[in-house]
Image 1: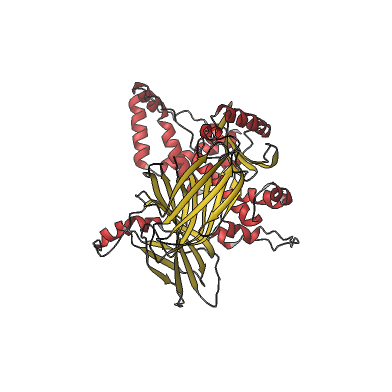
Image 2: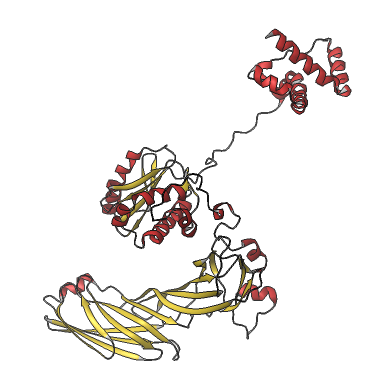
Length: 525
Protein backbone atom coordinates (compact mmCIF):
# COMPACT_ATOMS: atom_id res chain seq x y z
CA UNK A 1 0.00 0.00 0.00
CA UNK A 2 2.89 2.36 0.91
CA UNK A 3 4.64 1.63 -2.42
CA UNK A 4 1.46 2.33 -4.35
CA UNK A 5 1.00 5.61 -2.51
CA UNK A 6 4.61 6.67 -3.18
CA UNK A 7 4.20 5.96 -6.90
CA UNK A 8 0.96 7.88 -6.93
CA UNK A 9 2.62 10.94 -5.31
CA UNK A 10 5.50 10.74 -7.81
CA UNK A 11 3.00 10.68 -10.65
CA UNK A 12 1.22 13.67 -9.14
CA UNK A 13 4.52 15.58 -8.89
CA UNK A 14 5.24 14.67 -12.52
CA UNK A 15 1.95 16.20 -13.54
CA UNK A 16 3.04 19.41 -11.84
CA UNK A 17 6.41 19.52 -13.59
CA UNK A 18 4.73 19.87 -16.98
CA UNK A 19 3.28 23.26 -16.06
CA UNK A 20 6.11 25.54 -14.83
CA UNK A 21 3.91 28.55 -14.30
CA UNK A 22 1.60 26.70 -11.94
CA UNK A 23 4.56 25.09 -10.16
CA UNK A 24 6.28 28.44 -9.70
CA UNK A 25 3.16 30.12 -8.36
CA UNK A 26 2.57 27.26 -5.94
CA UNK A 27 6.14 27.34 -4.59
CA UNK A 28 6.03 31.13 -4.40
CA UNK A 29 2.78 31.16 -2.43
CA UNK A 30 4.04 28.49 -0.05
CA UNK A 31 7.36 30.28 0.50
CA UNK A 32 5.49 33.45 1.33
CA UNK A 33 3.46 31.52 3.83
CA UNK A 34 6.58 29.92 5.27
CA UNK A 35 5.56 26.40 4.27
CA UNK A 36 7.54 24.33 1.78
CA UNK A 37 5.90 20.93 2.25
CA UNK A 38 3.23 19.77 -0.20
CA UNK A 39 -0.36 19.85 1.03
CA UNK A 40 -1.80 16.87 2.81
CA UNK A 41 -3.50 14.56 0.30
CA UNK A 42 -6.23 12.00 0.68
CA UNK A 43 -5.96 9.56 -2.22
CA UNK A 44 -8.93 7.58 -0.93
CA UNK A 45 -11.13 10.57 -1.72
CA UNK A 46 -10.05 10.41 -5.35
CA UNK A 47 -9.72 6.69 -5.94
CA UNK A 48 -11.91 3.94 -4.54
CA UNK A 49 -9.40 1.13 -5.14
CA UNK A 50 -5.92 0.35 -6.41
CA UNK A 51 -7.44 -1.19 -9.54
CA UNK A 52 -8.84 2.16 -10.61
CA UNK A 53 -5.42 3.73 -9.98
CA UNK A 54 -3.79 1.11 -12.20
CA UNK A 55 -6.30 1.90 -14.96
CA UNK A 56 -5.53 5.57 -14.58
CA UNK A 57 -1.80 4.87 -14.77
CA UNK A 58 -2.30 3.27 -18.19
CA UNK A 59 -4.13 6.34 -19.53
CA UNK A 60 -2.10 9.53 -20.20
CA UNK A 61 -5.27 11.50 -20.83
CA UNK A 62 -6.66 10.61 -17.43
CA UNK A 63 -3.29 11.43 -15.78
CA UNK A 64 -3.59 14.94 -17.14
CA UNK A 65 -7.16 15.03 -15.85
CA UNK A 66 -5.87 13.91 -12.43
CA UNK A 67 -3.37 16.76 -12.37
CA UNK A 68 -6.17 19.28 -12.78
CA UNK A 69 -8.08 17.66 -9.90
CA UNK A 70 -5.05 17.81 -7.62
CA UNK A 71 -4.29 21.43 -8.51
CA UNK A 72 -7.84 22.20 -7.52
CA UNK A 73 -7.39 20.25 -4.28
CA UNK A 74 -4.16 22.05 -3.36
CA UNK A 75 -5.96 25.31 -2.64
CA UNK A 76 -9.11 23.75 -1.18
CA UNK A 77 -8.34 25.05 2.29
CA UNK A 78 -7.96 28.63 1.12
CA UNK A 79 -11.23 28.41 -0.85
CA UNK A 80 -13.01 27.08 2.23
CA UNK A 81 -11.87 30.10 4.22
CA UNK A 82 -13.12 32.42 1.47
CA UNK A 83 -16.49 30.65 1.28
CA UNK A 84 -17.13 31.19 4.97
CA UNK A 85 -17.08 34.95 4.42
CA UNK A 86 -19.71 34.82 1.65
CA UNK A 87 -23.35 35.54 2.55
CA UNK A 88 -25.64 32.54 2.69
CA UNK A 89 -27.69 31.81 -0.42
CA UNK A 90 -31.48 32.03 -0.12
CA UNK A 91 -33.21 28.68 0.40
CA UNK A 92 -34.31 26.83 -2.74
CA UNK A 93 -37.95 27.30 -3.48
CA UNK A 94 -40.02 24.13 -3.20
CA UNK A 95 -41.31 22.70 -6.49
CA UNK A 96 -42.39 19.49 -8.13
CA UNK A 97 -39.72 16.92 -8.92
CA UNK A 98 -38.32 16.71 -12.44
CA UNK A 99 -40.26 13.59 -13.41
CA UNK A 100 -43.81 14.64 -12.51
CA UNK A 101 -45.73 13.07 -15.37
CA UNK A 102 -45.36 9.36 -14.72
CA UNK A 103 -48.06 6.81 -13.85
CA UNK A 104 -47.20 4.11 -11.35
CA UNK A 105 -49.65 1.44 -12.56
CA UNK A 106 -52.54 0.95 -14.96
CA UNK A 107 -55.63 -1.15 -14.19
CA UNK A 108 -58.55 -2.31 -16.31
CA UNK A 109 -61.63 -2.99 -14.16
CA UNK A 110 -65.04 -4.43 -14.94
CA UNK A 111 -68.24 -2.52 -14.24
CA UNK A 112 -68.24 -3.76 -10.61
CA UNK A 113 -64.70 -2.57 -9.99
CA UNK A 114 -63.05 -6.00 -10.10
CA UNK A 115 -59.58 -5.90 -11.72
CA UNK A 116 -59.44 -7.79 -15.01
CA UNK A 117 -55.82 -7.03 -15.83
CA UNK A 118 -53.16 -4.65 -14.55
CA UNK A 119 -49.57 -3.60 -15.13
CA UNK A 120 -47.26 -2.28 -12.42
CA UNK A 121 -44.70 0.04 -14.03
CA UNK A 122 -42.83 1.57 -11.07
CA UNK A 123 -43.63 -0.47 -7.97
CA UNK A 124 -44.06 2.55 -5.71
CA UNK A 125 -47.82 2.04 -5.25
CA UNK A 126 -49.21 -1.15 -3.74
CA UNK A 127 -51.42 -3.01 -6.19
CA UNK A 128 -53.96 -3.53 -3.39
CA UNK A 129 -54.70 0.23 -3.44
CA UNK A 130 -57.09 -0.34 -6.36
CA UNK A 131 -59.54 -1.88 -3.88
CA UNK A 132 -60.22 1.65 -2.60
CA UNK A 133 -61.17 2.98 -6.04
CA UNK A 134 -64.72 1.65 -6.47
CA UNK A 135 -65.97 2.49 -2.91
CA UNK A 136 -64.53 5.98 -3.34
CA UNK A 137 -66.18 6.32 -6.76
CA UNK A 138 -69.59 5.23 -5.44
CA UNK A 139 -69.29 7.56 -2.45
CA UNK A 140 -68.50 10.56 -4.65
CA UNK A 141 -71.32 9.62 -7.01
CA UNK A 142 -73.83 9.54 -4.15
CA UNK A 143 -72.58 12.93 -2.94
CA UNK A 144 -72.89 14.38 -6.44
CA UNK A 145 -69.20 15.28 -6.41
CA UNK A 146 -67.89 12.80 -8.97
CA UNK A 147 -64.59 13.89 -10.53
CA UNK A 148 -62.15 12.35 -13.03
CA UNK A 149 -59.44 12.38 -10.35
CA UNK A 150 -59.98 10.68 -7.00
CA UNK A 151 -57.56 10.56 -4.07
CA UNK A 152 -57.17 8.10 -1.21
CA UNK A 153 -54.41 9.07 1.19
CA UNK A 154 -51.28 9.70 -0.87
CA UNK A 155 -52.54 7.70 -3.88
CA UNK A 156 -54.31 9.42 -6.77
CA UNK A 157 -56.64 7.59 -9.20
CA UNK A 158 -56.98 9.05 -12.71
CA UNK A 159 -59.75 7.18 -14.50
CA UNK A 160 -61.99 7.03 -17.56
CA UNK A 161 -64.94 4.80 -18.41
CA UNK A 162 -65.36 3.06 -21.76
CA UNK A 163 -68.31 0.76 -22.44
CA UNK A 164 -68.47 -1.53 -19.39
CA UNK A 165 -64.84 -1.01 -18.37
CA UNK A 166 -62.93 1.38 -16.13
CA UNK A 167 -59.35 2.29 -17.08
CA UNK A 168 -57.51 3.58 -14.01
CA UNK A 169 -53.97 4.95 -13.62
CA UNK A 170 -52.48 5.34 -10.13
CA UNK A 171 -49.72 7.70 -9.05
CA UNK A 172 -48.14 9.06 -5.89
CA UNK A 173 -46.72 12.20 -7.45
CA UNK A 174 -48.26 15.37 -8.79
CA UNK A 175 -48.51 13.75 -12.24
CA UNK A 176 -49.18 15.52 -15.52
CA UNK A 177 -52.91 14.73 -15.62
CA UNK A 178 -53.43 15.71 -19.26
CA UNK A 179 -50.69 13.31 -20.36
CA UNK A 180 -52.12 10.45 -18.28
CA UNK A 181 -55.65 10.98 -19.65
CA UNK A 182 -54.31 11.22 -23.20
CA UNK A 183 -52.53 7.92 -22.63
CA UNK A 184 -55.69 6.24 -21.29
CA UNK A 185 -57.75 7.38 -24.29
CA UNK A 186 -54.94 6.31 -26.62
CA UNK A 187 -54.95 2.90 -24.94
CA UNK A 188 -58.67 2.59 -25.67
CA UNK A 189 -57.99 3.52 -29.29
CA UNK A 190 -55.22 0.92 -29.65
CA UNK A 191 -57.27 -1.84 -28.03
CA UNK A 192 -60.22 -0.97 -30.28
CA UNK A 193 -57.94 -1.30 -33.33
CA UNK A 194 -56.96 -4.78 -32.19
CA UNK A 195 -60.28 -6.11 -30.90
CA UNK A 196 -62.81 -4.00 -32.89
CA UNK A 197 -64.98 -3.61 -29.76
CA UNK A 198 -63.35 -2.90 -26.41
CA UNK A 199 -65.41 -4.48 -23.66
CA UNK A 200 -65.00 -6.96 -20.82
CA UNK A 201 -65.31 -10.03 -23.04
CA UNK A 202 -62.63 -8.82 -25.48
CA UNK A 203 -60.20 -8.26 -22.56
CA UNK A 204 -60.85 -11.73 -21.13
CA UNK A 205 -60.38 -13.36 -24.54
CA UNK A 206 -57.07 -11.60 -25.26
CA UNK A 207 -55.12 -11.52 -21.99
CA UNK A 208 -51.77 -12.30 -23.61
CA UNK A 209 -52.05 -9.59 -26.27
CA UNK A 210 -53.27 -7.05 -23.71
CA UNK A 211 -50.24 -7.75 -21.51
CA UNK A 212 -47.90 -7.36 -24.49
CA UNK A 213 -49.57 -4.10 -25.51
CA UNK A 214 -49.38 -2.68 -21.99
CA UNK A 215 -45.64 -3.47 -21.99
CA UNK A 216 -45.08 -1.61 -25.26
CA UNK A 217 -47.44 1.31 -24.65
CA UNK A 218 -45.71 2.46 -21.46
CA UNK A 219 -42.29 2.03 -19.85
CA UNK A 220 -41.59 3.01 -16.23
CA UNK A 221 -44.76 5.08 -16.25
CA UNK A 222 -44.00 7.06 -19.42
CA UNK A 223 -45.83 6.57 -22.76
CA UNK A 224 -43.74 4.91 -25.45
CA UNK A 225 -45.05 3.48 -28.76
CA UNK A 226 -48.75 4.34 -29.04
CA UNK A 227 -49.27 4.05 -32.81
CA UNK A 228 -51.45 0.99 -33.47
CA UNK A 229 -50.09 0.50 -36.99
CA UNK A 230 -46.53 0.27 -35.69
CA UNK A 231 -47.55 -2.02 -32.83
CA UNK A 232 -49.29 -4.36 -35.26
CA UNK A 233 -45.97 -4.96 -37.01
CA UNK A 234 -44.60 -6.97 -34.11
CA UNK A 235 -47.58 -7.70 -31.81
CA UNK A 236 -49.97 -9.85 -33.81
CA UNK A 237 -53.09 -11.78 -32.91
CA UNK A 238 -51.84 -14.91 -34.68
CA UNK A 239 -49.65 -17.39 -32.82
CA UNK A 240 -46.01 -17.36 -33.91
CA UNK A 241 -43.41 -20.06 -33.41
CA UNK A 242 -40.18 -18.95 -31.76
CA UNK A 243 -37.33 -18.73 -34.26
CA UNK A 244 -33.93 -18.24 -32.67
CA UNK A 245 -32.04 -15.32 -34.14
CA UNK A 246 -35.02 -14.08 -36.13
CA UNK A 247 -36.45 -11.61 -33.63
CA UNK A 248 -35.80 -7.98 -34.43
CA UNK A 249 -37.21 -4.58 -33.60
CA UNK A 250 -39.19 -3.13 -36.54
CA UNK A 251 -37.20 -0.33 -38.24
CA UNK A 252 -40.10 2.06 -37.73
CA UNK A 253 -39.55 2.01 -33.96
CA UNK A 254 -36.02 3.42 -34.28
CA UNK A 255 -36.46 5.51 -37.46
CA UNK A 256 -36.80 9.28 -37.39
CA UNK A 257 -40.13 8.67 -39.15
CA UNK A 258 -41.47 6.12 -36.70
CA UNK A 259 -45.03 6.25 -38.03
CA UNK A 260 -44.25 4.99 -41.56
CA UNK A 261 -42.43 1.88 -42.75
CA UNK A 262 -40.01 1.90 -45.65
CA UNK A 263 -40.52 -0.02 -48.86
CA UNK A 264 -44.29 0.56 -49.23
CA UNK A 265 -45.48 0.08 -52.83
CA UNK A 266 -48.83 0.59 -54.55
CA UNK A 267 -49.80 0.11 -58.18
CA UNK A 268 -52.09 3.13 -57.99
CA UNK A 269 -51.07 6.05 -55.78
CA UNK A 270 -54.02 7.90 -54.25
CA UNK A 271 -54.89 10.11 -51.27
CA UNK A 272 -58.45 10.49 -49.97
CA UNK A 273 -59.16 13.58 -47.83
CA UNK A 274 -62.28 13.85 -45.65
CA UNK A 275 -63.13 17.22 -44.13
CA UNK A 276 -65.71 16.46 -41.41
CA UNK A 277 -67.38 19.18 -39.35
CA UNK A 278 -69.64 18.54 -36.35
CA UNK A 279 -72.10 21.24 -35.29
CA UNK A 280 -72.70 21.68 -31.55
CA UNK A 281 -75.84 23.75 -30.95
CA UNK A 282 -78.09 24.60 -28.02
CA UNK A 283 -81.27 26.66 -28.61
CA UNK A 284 -83.59 27.76 -25.81
CA UNK A 285 -87.41 27.64 -25.85
CA UNK A 286 -87.61 31.22 -27.18
CA UNK A 287 -85.55 30.34 -30.27
CA UNK A 288 -82.37 32.08 -29.14
CA UNK A 289 -79.06 30.32 -29.76
CA UNK A 290 -77.29 29.82 -26.42
CA UNK A 291 -74.30 27.87 -27.70
CA UNK A 292 -72.93 27.23 -31.17
CA UNK A 293 -69.55 25.94 -32.29
CA UNK A 294 -68.02 23.89 -35.07
CA UNK A 295 -65.58 21.08 -34.33
CA UNK A 296 -63.77 19.92 -37.45
CA UNK A 297 -61.39 17.10 -38.33
CA UNK A 298 -59.39 16.37 -41.48
CA UNK A 299 -58.89 12.65 -42.01
CA UNK A 300 -56.69 11.05 -44.65
CA UNK A 301 -56.61 7.63 -46.26
CA UNK A 302 -53.17 7.30 -47.85
CA UNK A 303 -52.17 4.76 -50.52
CA UNK A 304 -48.76 6.12 -51.60
CA UNK A 305 -45.52 4.34 -52.44
CA UNK A 306 -42.15 5.14 -50.92
CA UNK A 307 -41.59 7.97 -48.44
CA UNK A 308 -43.57 10.90 -49.89
CA UNK A 309 -43.83 14.41 -48.48
CA UNK A 310 -47.28 16.01 -48.60
CA UNK A 311 -48.20 19.68 -48.38
CA UNK A 312 -51.78 20.65 -47.64
CA UNK A 313 -53.14 24.12 -48.33
CA UNK A 314 -56.33 25.46 -46.69
CA UNK A 315 -58.11 28.80 -46.91
CA UNK A 316 -56.62 29.75 -43.55
CA UNK A 317 -57.16 33.42 -42.69
CA UNK A 318 -53.73 33.80 -41.08
CA UNK A 319 -52.07 32.30 -44.17
CA UNK A 320 -54.00 34.67 -46.44
CA UNK A 321 -52.88 37.65 -44.38
CA UNK A 322 -49.23 36.51 -44.52
CA UNK A 323 -49.33 36.01 -48.30
CA UNK A 324 -51.48 39.05 -49.10
CA UNK A 325 -54.42 37.02 -50.44
CA UNK A 326 -56.97 38.36 -47.97
CA UNK A 327 -59.87 40.10 -49.66
CA UNK A 328 -63.55 39.90 -50.48
CA UNK A 329 -62.97 37.38 -53.29
CA UNK A 330 -60.99 34.96 -51.14
CA UNK A 331 -63.17 33.53 -48.40
CA UNK A 332 -61.11 32.42 -45.43
CA UNK A 333 -61.72 30.85 -42.03
CA UNK A 334 -59.97 31.48 -38.71
CA UNK A 335 -59.02 28.15 -37.15
CA UNK A 336 -58.81 27.80 -33.35
CA UNK A 337 -57.44 25.08 -31.07
CA UNK A 338 -55.63 23.38 -33.96
CA UNK A 339 -54.17 19.96 -33.10
CA UNK A 340 -51.99 17.96 -35.48
CA UNK A 341 -50.86 14.38 -35.92
CA UNK A 342 -47.25 13.81 -34.86
CA UNK A 343 -46.18 13.60 -38.52
CA UNK A 344 -46.78 17.35 -39.14
CA UNK A 345 -43.74 19.64 -39.00
CA UNK A 346 -44.89 22.11 -36.38
CA UNK A 347 -41.94 24.49 -36.80
CA UNK A 348 -42.82 25.06 -40.43
CA UNK A 349 -46.49 25.60 -39.61
CA UNK A 350 -45.52 28.19 -36.99
CA UNK A 351 -43.30 30.01 -39.50
CA UNK A 352 -45.44 30.16 -42.66
CA UNK A 353 -48.63 28.17 -41.85
CA UNK A 354 -47.63 25.40 -44.27
CA UNK A 355 -48.96 21.96 -43.32
CA UNK A 356 -46.07 19.72 -44.41
CA UNK A 357 -45.76 16.06 -43.39
CA UNK A 358 -44.71 12.51 -44.26
CA UNK A 359 -47.98 10.59 -43.77
CA UNK A 360 -48.54 7.21 -42.12
CA UNK A 361 -49.83 4.47 -44.38
CA UNK A 362 -53.60 3.96 -44.42
CA UNK A 363 -56.16 5.84 -42.31
CA UNK A 364 -55.26 8.53 -39.79
CA UNK A 365 -56.50 11.88 -38.47
CA UNK A 366 -54.23 14.64 -39.74
CA UNK A 367 -55.63 17.53 -37.70
CA UNK A 368 -58.59 18.86 -35.74
CA UNK A 369 -59.80 22.40 -35.20
CA UNK A 370 -62.60 24.42 -33.62
CA UNK A 371 -64.54 27.51 -34.68
CA UNK A 372 -66.50 29.54 -32.14
CA UNK A 373 -68.95 31.21 -34.47
CA UNK A 374 -72.66 31.92 -34.60
CA UNK A 375 -74.19 29.02 -36.51
CA UNK A 376 -77.71 29.18 -37.92
CA UNK A 377 -79.62 26.00 -36.97
CA UNK A 378 -79.41 23.74 -40.02
CA UNK A 379 -82.55 21.81 -39.05
CA UNK A 380 -85.09 23.87 -37.13
CA UNK A 381 -87.59 22.10 -34.88
CA UNK A 382 -90.89 23.42 -33.49
CA UNK A 383 -93.12 21.38 -31.21
CA UNK A 384 -96.63 21.89 -29.80
CA UNK A 385 -98.23 19.79 -27.05
CA UNK A 386 -102.02 19.55 -26.77
CA UNK A 387 -103.60 17.96 -23.71
CA UNK A 388 -107.08 16.47 -23.81
CA UNK A 389 -108.69 16.11 -20.36
CA UNK A 390 -106.57 13.78 -18.22
CA UNK A 391 -106.41 10.80 -20.51
CA UNK A 392 -104.37 11.60 -23.62
CA UNK A 393 -101.87 14.01 -25.14
CA UNK A 394 -101.00 14.94 -28.71
CA UNK A 395 -97.53 16.15 -29.77
CA UNK A 396 -97.04 17.91 -33.09
CA UNK A 397 -93.49 18.42 -34.40
CA UNK A 398 -92.47 20.49 -37.44
CA UNK A 399 -88.98 20.15 -38.93
CA UNK A 400 -87.54 22.59 -41.48
CA UNK A 401 -84.26 22.36 -43.37
CA UNK A 402 -82.45 25.74 -43.19
CA UNK A 403 -79.50 24.90 -45.42
CA UNK A 404 -78.91 25.20 -49.17
CA UNK A 405 -81.58 23.73 -51.41
CA UNK A 406 -79.04 21.81 -53.49
CA UNK A 407 -77.85 19.98 -50.36
CA UNK A 408 -79.56 16.98 -48.77
CA UNK A 409 -79.35 15.79 -45.17
CA UNK A 410 -79.14 12.01 -44.82
CA UNK A 411 -80.05 9.76 -41.92
CA UNK A 412 -81.99 12.41 -39.99
CA UNK A 413 -83.20 11.29 -36.55
CA UNK A 414 -85.30 13.60 -34.38
CA UNK A 415 -85.68 12.47 -30.74
CA UNK A 416 -88.81 13.97 -29.14
CA UNK A 417 -89.19 13.44 -25.35
CA UNK A 418 -92.56 12.16 -24.08
CA UNK A 419 -93.98 11.67 -20.55
CA UNK A 420 -92.61 8.64 -18.72
CA UNK A 421 -96.13 7.27 -18.05
CA UNK A 422 -97.31 7.55 -21.68
CA UNK A 423 -98.79 4.50 -23.42
CA UNK A 424 -100.80 3.46 -26.50
CA UNK A 425 -98.70 5.40 -29.05
CA UNK A 426 -100.07 6.32 -32.50
CA UNK A 427 -98.11 8.24 -35.15
CA UNK A 428 -98.74 10.10 -38.39
CA UNK A 429 -95.87 11.52 -40.45
CA UNK A 430 -95.68 13.42 -43.75
CA UNK A 431 -92.38 11.69 -44.51
CA UNK A 432 -90.27 8.98 -42.89
CA UNK A 433 -91.34 6.83 -39.94
CA UNK A 434 -91.71 7.23 -36.17
CA UNK A 435 -91.28 4.74 -33.35
CA UNK A 436 -91.71 4.87 -29.59
CA UNK A 437 -88.70 3.92 -27.42
CA UNK A 438 -90.19 3.47 -23.92
CA UNK A 439 -86.86 2.76 -22.15
CA UNK A 440 -85.66 6.24 -23.16
CA UNK A 441 -89.06 7.96 -23.02
CA UNK A 442 -88.66 9.36 -26.52
CA UNK A 443 -90.20 9.16 -29.97
CA UNK A 444 -87.62 8.84 -32.74
CA UNK A 445 -88.70 10.30 -36.07
CA UNK A 446 -86.46 8.96 -38.85
CA UNK A 447 -86.15 10.67 -42.22
CA UNK A 448 -83.88 9.01 -44.76
CA UNK A 449 -83.46 12.06 -47.02
CA UNK A 450 -84.18 15.66 -46.01
CA UNK A 451 -83.60 18.28 -48.80
CA UNK A 452 -82.78 21.86 -47.86
CA UNK A 453 -85.69 24.29 -47.64
CA UNK A 454 -88.30 21.55 -47.05
CA UNK A 455 -90.76 21.28 -44.13
CA UNK A 456 -92.21 18.08 -42.69
CA UNK A 457 -94.74 17.27 -39.94
CA UNK A 458 -95.16 14.49 -37.42
CA UNK A 459 -98.08 13.90 -35.02
CA UNK A 460 -97.95 11.55 -32.05
CA UNK A 461 -100.90 10.52 -29.85
CA UNK A 462 -100.41 8.97 -26.39
CA UNK A 463 -102.65 7.80 -23.58
CA UNK A 464 -101.86 9.37 -20.19
CA UNK A 465 -102.91 7.96 -16.80
CA UNK A 466 -101.64 11.15 -15.11
CA UNK A 467 -101.07 14.49 -16.85
CA UNK A 468 -99.82 16.24 -13.70
CA UNK A 469 -96.75 14.01 -13.42
CA UNK A 470 -95.36 15.30 -16.71
CA UNK A 471 -95.42 18.87 -15.44
CA UNK A 472 -93.38 17.92 -12.36
CA UNK A 473 -90.80 16.10 -14.47
CA UNK A 474 -90.29 18.91 -16.98
CA UNK A 475 -89.34 18.37 -20.62
CA UNK A 476 -85.87 17.39 -21.83
CA UNK A 477 -84.66 19.04 -25.06
CA UNK A 478 -85.27 17.67 -28.54
CA UNK A 479 -82.17 16.06 -30.07
CA UNK A 480 -81.35 15.95 -33.78
CA UNK A 481 -78.91 13.76 -35.70
CA UNK A 482 -78.05 14.29 -39.37
CA UNK A 483 -75.30 14.20 -41.98
CA UNK A 484 -75.01 16.56 -44.97
CA UNK A 485 -72.43 15.50 -47.61
CA UNK A 486 -70.57 17.91 -49.93
CA UNK A 487 -71.20 20.79 -47.51
CA UNK A 488 -69.30 22.61 -44.74
CA UNK A 489 -70.78 25.14 -42.34
CA UNK A 490 -67.53 27.05 -41.81
CA UNK A 491 -66.67 27.30 -45.50
CA UNK A 492 -63.26 25.64 -45.08
CA UNK A 493 -61.73 24.48 -48.36
CA UNK A 494 -58.76 22.37 -49.41
CA UNK A 495 -56.95 24.66 -51.87
CA UNK A 496 -54.26 22.18 -52.88
CA UNK A 497 -52.52 18.93 -51.97
CA UNK A 498 -48.95 18.60 -53.25
CA UNK A 499 -47.34 15.15 -53.25
CA UNK A 500 -43.55 15.07 -53.56
CA UNK A 501 -41.66 11.77 -53.85
CA UNK A 502 -38.13 11.14 -55.16
CA UNK A 503 -39.32 8.68 -57.81
CA UNK A 504 -41.58 11.40 -59.24
CA UNK A 505 -44.78 9.35 -59.64
CA UNK A 506 -48.15 10.99 -60.22
CA UNK A 507 -50.75 10.68 -57.45
CA UNK A 508 -54.44 11.59 -57.33
CA UNK A 509 -55.87 13.45 -54.31
CA UNK A 510 -59.63 13.17 -53.68
CA UNK A 511 -61.52 15.53 -51.35
CA UNK A 512 -64.89 15.02 -49.65
CA UNK A 513 -66.75 17.42 -47.34
CA UNK A 514 -69.23 16.28 -44.67
CA UNK A 515 -71.23 18.24 -42.09
CA UNK A 516 -72.83 16.27 -39.27
CA UNK A 517 -74.58 16.89 -35.99
CA UNK A 518 -72.63 16.92 -32.78
CA UNK A 519 -74.38 17.84 -29.53
CA UNK A 520 -77.43 19.34 -31.28
CA UNK A 521 -80.32 20.18 -28.92
CA UNK A 522 -83.38 22.43 -29.00
CA UNK A 523 -85.27 23.16 -25.78
CA UNK A 524 -89.06 23.31 -25.75
CA UNK A 525 -91.49 25.15 -23.51
